[in-house]
Image (cartoon, rainbow, N blue to C red; front, side, top):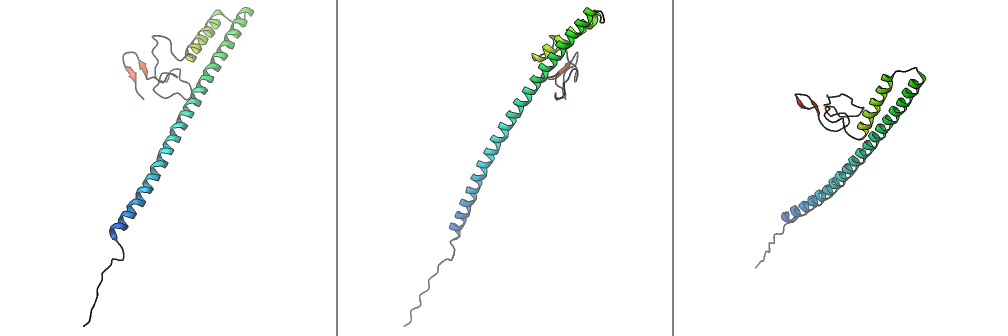
Length: 146
């Protein structure tokens, strides 16, 4: 009498193998999600920083323009007192100073429509009223879109 024993054993359990690979891929995806979140935070903070730096530079430029206009007004008044300039020159310098002060305060003259690009400073977005960040408007046409 001969006994033959046959035993069958899988070399690889395919379900366990697939489960292992799925777990590895899920771990990798989690790491990538974490890195994406970090990158998003870095980009957001960098954008806020650059916006703050840009706003500070615009404020400094506006203050500089007011100082220049004030100096030009004093010069025009001194020339007028010396008899080498007319009252129109003084008035022009006063108006320019008033405009620059209003621009430094963040607005335009009340009721004054601003054409696209009129009075724009370097760095202003096209289609925005000069330095205000608002869409420019033309009489009878409404807002001008860029």
